[in-house]
Image 1 (cartoon, helix red, strand yellow):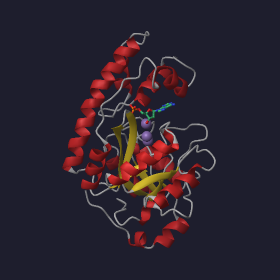
Image 2: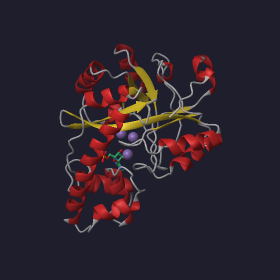
Image 3: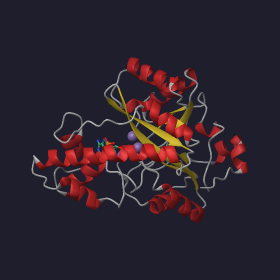
Image 4: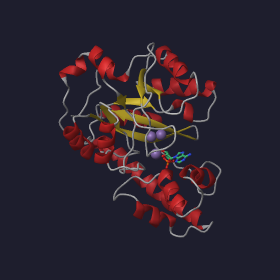
Length: 298
Ligand code: AMP
Ligand code: MN
Ligand code: MN
Ligand code: MN
């Protein structure tokens, strides 16, 4: 795929003054509600200028988003969100400005796809034990062909079945750690994910660092190991953050020499979570779009 580096990109001051970035979003290529073109249309209406498409373990939504981006005059950043395993925890690494056609990245995607398939079948078996027959097949049928199935897809299926009053409650009752539908997965390591992202020309970013339920000592250990493995950025600004969280993350970016990213992690409309809202990066951190490899596709 051909990439275009806009002249404007070189003029950082223009970007900062005029552009709104949302660099972490999901489409129907994984567990997002909107087709890529519809997400781009929505982003256009929300006055977003630069939209990163970061579906779980797939780049399939990127192509349609680029076409829609051309139609709406919205810049698209090709991305992915890879699930990794670190000391028994699931850590998400986003890759931005990647080449979605890269062979080695796609080999890693296939590996994750196989792991996800085996896990989804097991989740289906677990959910059958509490009365949700054929949960895997029916969750798959609700999703787009070839989409990555995550616990988010299972939560949407359970919600449709009336398992709980909200998708969030379905997740917490059936799919969260310790629940009947929670199945461990043997994702790739952080190092493998970073290597694949960098090999595909992209920038590896530690996603939503405060959502791993670890204390600050472990967060520091995670950031240190991520950086040692070649990671170059960290999400600092997101939706629904505790007060002082982004300032803390911005100072950690500065300390560990990481670029700061921002993204809503939008999947669907939800209270307190919208596309492109309140994603400013504190001034002490260097925004990810200053990274020499940051690029847009249209
Ligand atoms: P997985 O990668 O299969 O473990 O699934 C992770 C996905 O589950 C996340 O990306 C979210 O889309 C979804 N998820 C996580 N927590 C919740 C929640 N509380 N309510 C609904 N969906 C959630
Ligand atoms: Mn998700
Ligand atoms: Mn995530
Ligand atoms: Mn995400």
